[in-house]
Length: 375
Image (cartoon, rainbow, N blue to C red; front, top):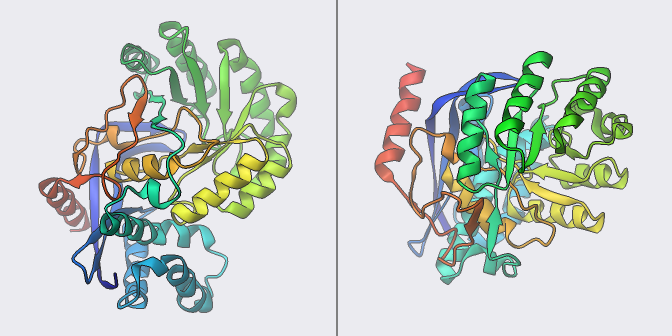
């Protein structure tokens, strides 16, 4: 199968409610829909999670597309890194591996969808086969006030989620009130917190010591990721398990993190690694260090849920409570399958490719929302 065209459609997918976290309030998921067309009529579909704005990523994608036209969809790994060398790095952007990965991930992932559809196989089979028949997710608690978050947490517990995930890092007093309120309505679940790099070392130590009273399973990235493993090692004496998130994007960074024994898990998404191959490479590095890998969510749609479900099922050290974010959307762009977890789990699809169907009307509305915000 040869690539005949790559279509890019910028989308703004609005949230049902304001999303509150350490970095402020977010209102929507900005993504770029990627469709890789082939000479056999097969179309591979994925998305690139955009940020902080769509336009720079869109410009890079438009520059990259001619490098792929007429080439085999099976050569995706070579094509992407050839473009990195001659079309991206060669222009003075060589240090921007992370931004390049986030931008180009949609093309890499869409090519796997095309391969799976062309062969009539789910992507997990193309990658060697699923090791899990279902993938677990945590209940992502939403709201602004402690009471709103507690109410949402109670609903998630009633829906059967064994793990809850709460954003902190907004304000010390508020954080403690939030965690206390959530723990009161969910006394028996495993509780995870994410401060999104909000604290320096002293503040992190102080807050983690106070939060230990609420039986926290793991604290995700409490200090700035730029500090790497050293910044997390400074917190080990607190005695709370740690996850690295913004500290790691690339397989090389996963190796550096795991070699220090700073964390119990690595939180990493397929967009951050530039797609499936490098995400699985990162997972293998973590596995060698006996460290779990947790699928990270970005501002995304159900497309990424389906992708991560397929790829994540192929690694042995996958965590049992991963992140999804399609449920935050006012309207997802996936028609099928139903992506609502049952007791915190989704089955691994056996349909060709990633196994989803787009809702083209919803795509059209999200595309129009993008155009409106540009005017």
